[in-house]
Image (cartoon, rainbow, N blue to C red; front, side, top):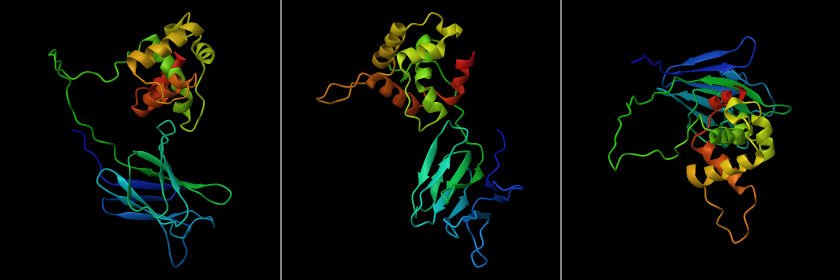
Length: 245
């Protein structure tokens, strides 16, 4: 088993950066600071509280406290395709699940930021044991990453994977254009895209039509597929490499 180093590293965006190494149980403060209220990570902006927050190191993760009475902070995962969490004002010791994080604090003209590096996450080493019995555990969403329908699902999710706040969900013609020239989707047509989207919705991801007395919008399937696929990490940022083959 690899040795895992406990504690976290907090690093400012200055040049050269200020770096604070925190052992479990140690804390670092951030904010505008003053002679009476010094901080570990200085964010010199008049819109930022003198002591705006605190980072507390735990064994393999960290907690953040927002000491502002009005500002919400955002913590981004720079490696997660736009993944982020929000820290409400006065929220104390909120766990942060990212190994690498950018903490963003709103300022006057632009936001201030700094980085936090946590230890690598631990995962259970569970070997897959084939089980052919009738009550064997089955796959919730049996997707074949080499199949044409997976490429279509990936193209649907691409804008959201690249920018989590993007409202764009590609149409069938846009998917045809995006996948043109890729060996796995040779000869793809608009009708074929719509067939695969319907197949994904009915058979693979089993999304249901909105429960409404009104007629659902024509693009409800695409919206539902993107939401479900991203929610359960069925398509991830590393899959984007398939779009450049």
